[in-house]
Amino acid sequence: MLAFPLTTGIQMAQSVVSETYSEIVPFQPDRPRRNLEREYVSDTSRFIDVNGTDIHYRIEGNADGPTLLLIHGTYSSLHTWDGWVDQLTEKFRLVRLDLPGFGLTGPREDGPNRLEGLIEAAGNFCDELGLSEIAVAGNSLGGAVAWRLSVDRPDLVSKLVLLDAGGATLLSKLGRKYSPLGSDFVPRYVTPRSVIRLILKDAYGDPSKVTPELVRRYHDLLLRSGNRRAVIEIARNYQREHDDSHNGWELLDVRPPALPSSPDLHPNVQDDYSIADVSVPTLFQWGSEDEWLPMSFGRELADETPDAVFQSYEGIGHIPMEEAPTQTAADAAAFLRATDSA
Image 1 (cartoon, helix red, strand yellow):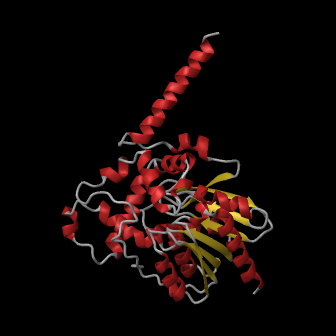
Image 2 (cartoon, one colour):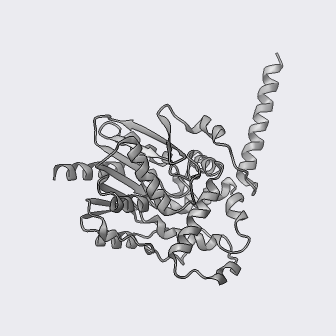
C-alpha cells in the first residue's frame, strides 16, 4: 500500500528539482528532439524532408478553403499561431511550419544558417507540398521571410499579412551582441527559463498575459538541440553580410546582455530586398506598444508598399497574434476575403 505514494512522492520531487533547474540555473543543456516531441507533437503534426532538413509542420482547418501559410518569428515556433488556428479553422486551410533552426525542426544540415536560407527553405517547403498562389502571414523575422519570399516567388505568394514584420532588422543588433570575443557561450547555453520570461514580457504590451505555459513552451523549444547555435549563426551571418557598421574592432567590444527593447534600436532594412518591390495586396498589423520594432517603422514600410493597408492595435506589443488572436485573426480574414472579391 506504500508503494504508490512513495513512487508518487519521488516523481513529485524529481519534477520540483527539474522545474527549479530550468527556472534559475544559468547553464541549460540542449534537449533531444525526441524528448520534446512527446509534448509538442500533435495529431496533425507531420515531418517532411526539405533539402536534408526534417521540417515539422501542420495542416489544419478547411481543406476546401483558401490556403494561408503561417510563419513564426525569432525564438518562436509554429505554436505561436495557435490562437489564429482556433479562430480561422472553419474558413481557411492553415499551413504552419517550424523554420530551420527553430521549434522541432532544428538547424539545417546542408549549409550555413542564414536569412536567405530561411527564405529558400520556406519556398522549397511550399513546393514539396504543391502549394501555389497562397496567402502568407508572418510575424517579426517570419514577416521578413514572408515579404522577401513574395518578391522572390511571385508564383507562390498572392497576398501578405505582416505582423510587426521586418524582424531581419533586429538581426544585425543580435549579431553585434554575438560577435565579441568569447560571447558565444552566454547566448548558446546560459538561457534559464527566467531569462525567457523577461524577454517575453519585454515583447508583450501587457506582461500579465505571459503565462507559465507560454514561457515553458518558448524555453523548451529553444533548447532543442542546435537551435540556439542556429539563432546565433543567422544573426551573426546577417550582421556580417549586411551591416556596414561591422568592423574588426567589435571583436574586442564585450557588451553586457540587453533586452531587444533597449533604446539604441534604429530599425532599417539592410539587405538587398526593398519592400517597394512587393506587388501583392499587403495588410500590416502592428502593436502600438511594440518596443522591438516601433509602429513608426511599420508605417514607413506600409507607406513604401504599393498596395497596403495598415492596422494598429492599442496596448499590444511585438507578437499580436498571441496577445490579441481574436481581433487580429478577424481583421486578417476580412482583408483576405476583400482581396479575393476585389
